[in-house]
Image (tube, rainbow, N blue to C red; front, side, top):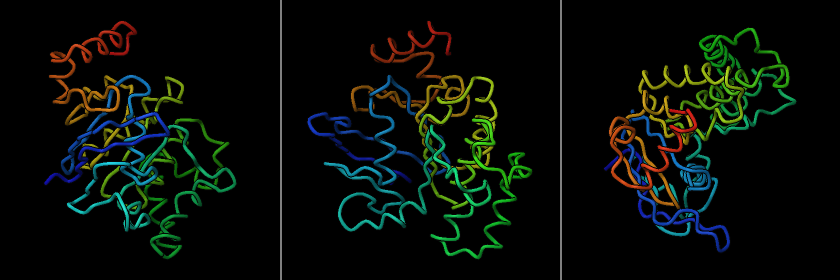
Length: 247
């Protein structure tokens, strides 16, 4: 069985069926990029994997254990599955260091000194140790997003979900965030990303999944998807991306 298995998952918001029997498998240490037009269900799928949204059908398993449906320990799930959003979601009244150490000390019951030492090591790694006492509004968007990723990493998750994390950034700040993800990929972090960064997906992904109208319409290695897509809808989507100069 795959490390992460999404089986025939349905998700509705009222009458709007956002996920329509979606299937997806992710192996350990893979980087899987979800691409597709806005509204195709990429973000909703990530939120379902993390337990932020309940599903109406199917199941999701991590390491063989069911992580959807009744009786699931959501706190345990979120210790194992980190998620980073496009809007950073840092606590504005807390310093960078406090933002990163909050979950390890409160959820993992890690001693404060140990949590701070780990946080400082992570901040040093991304070149932001000097910002440990700064507040989010004193950081650039790229710095805030890197701190948000580090906050997720501080929990030492088995799986990291990233939801359009560069879409709110100015173009010149995107590269510093993508460089961090490249480093994590090289180290073997298992990641599932919803992204519009096609060049990054082509370079780093183990597998690319094109989503359309709530299902995985086509999937395969990056070279296949980007140079020889099999389905007409995938071809149309990539043609529009190329026309916009984004690939």
